[in-house]
Structures are given as structure tokens and as C-alpha cells.
Image (cartoon, one colour):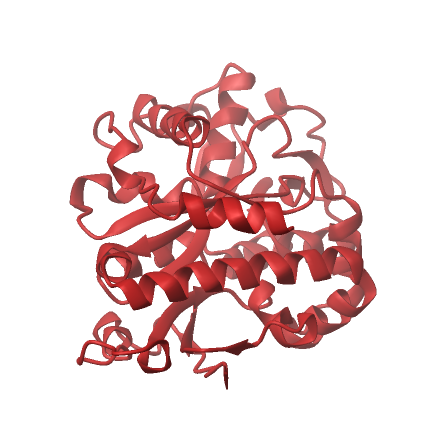
Length: 328
């Protein structure tokens, strides 16, 4: 068993072609020859692999760090990444051009960390108050989808607001400069804003399914050894989530060290979760959930036309995932 090869790469600091070059050209003869190219986020569950006792793998891992699932989907579609996780939303945006990405598993998880924030002194108290306002969001993510759902609930359209697409980091800066009247955001940036006085107007609860997906490239899935490495990686991720659920203080301390954010932020995020994380197989409910998302984007003319998401899904790992479920 060899230790994980943690080559953490920042997209933007390395081209997709450079990421693709991380994979050996020769076909692997054993798991020891495999280098699994894994997309991650700063402070993602992989950071807890060592503490959870699952870091030793019979293959190598080259981690590439991204700031959003939309970029991970694009990297897999470009053949630069073998496997990565994201919400069910980013793949919707690449359906017309996709020949590479397949959704192979579901990670059911929290939606309360998906926040709609307003400044501490805001007069906005309900969704109708968003009319005429500047709303920040992250394109092609859960943030984008929640914004559309909020507008529908309030009887508004995108034409009734000023939508401003920003990265999470740029959104935090804009929000704190007073350039946004509301901000739809996920993850650590939202909690940092809350701790600095932002108010929660609402969350993703009741608007998001809680389905986050594992996506893999067709080439990796079609190679027996890479496919075995992907299954093993998913199992280790599930075990790491289990460890985090029962070692909250240790997990929060570890992730705080990795991200530079206060430990209390992660303890708060854990306490407010809508559910624990669970690995699940591909099924008709998961596909139907993503189809609903795709239809919302099509109806809002965010994507050019309605798309069928079913070809994105690949159930060939279901049997192995069922074994993980039974062992959990």
C-alpha cells in the first residue's frame, strides 16, 4: 500500500492539457501503476483521509484543486480529470458538448450550507423584497439554481433583478463592500459573511434535493484498473465522512488548518446540517431530480433548450456501491 501522492494543483495555475499529462501514457498493468486524477476543493473530505485512517491506497492519487463544481465538470469533459464530486447542477451545462463525463454515484448531503444572505442592516425580510435588487450568485452551480427558484417563489423573473455572476471569493468581497443587496452562496464564504454580520434570508432547504454527484471520465471507467481505483476512492471518501460525523472537533480543527478559516465555522456548519452524508447508487430518482433541475434552467432560458440528462448517468458501479452501503 502506498501513501497518497498529494500533488495539489490550482486550476488556472496549470492548463487542462497540463492536468491531462498527469496520467501515464502506458496502460497500467496493476493498481500500483495507476495514478487517479482526482478533483477536490480546499478543505474537502479528502483532507481528512489520513486522520480517518484511509490514506494508504494501492494506487497513487494526483489531486487537482478547484473552486467550483462547474470547473470540475469542464475538466472531466476535457479529459483532464478522472473523478470528482459536484452538485447535480454543473453537468446540466455541458450536456450538448459532453462525450466524456458520466455520473456514477450520488453523495446525499446537507443543503443548509447553501445560503441566501443579506447585509445586517438590510430592509429585505422576505423573497418579494428581492425585486429590483442586486443579487450575487455563482454561475452553473447550486447558487444559480437557488436564485431561479427564489424568483419563481416570489413571482419574479430575472428581469426583475440585477443578477451578478461572481466566484465565491469575489462574491464575498463584493458583498462586504456593499455592492450586493443579496448573495446566494454555498460553503465557507457564506459562513464567514455570517460571522461578520450578514443575515440569513433563507437556505437551500426545500429547494435543493441534497443530491451531490460523483462524476468520472468514460476513459477511466472503461479501464478495469482505473475503475477499481475509482470504486476504492469512493469507499474511502464514505469512510472519511463517517469519521467526520463522529469526530466533529477533530474534523473541524483539521479543516480549519487546511483552509485558514476559524474552527468554529465548521462546527457551526456541522450543527446546522440538514442530514448526514451518505453514498448512494445511481437510480431513477436521482436521474429524475437532475432532470427537474435541467428543466428549470431551460425554462429560464439559461441553457438554450431542454436537455435529456439520462445519457449522463452510468450505473456500472452500482453493485460495488451497494456493498459499501451494507458495510457502513
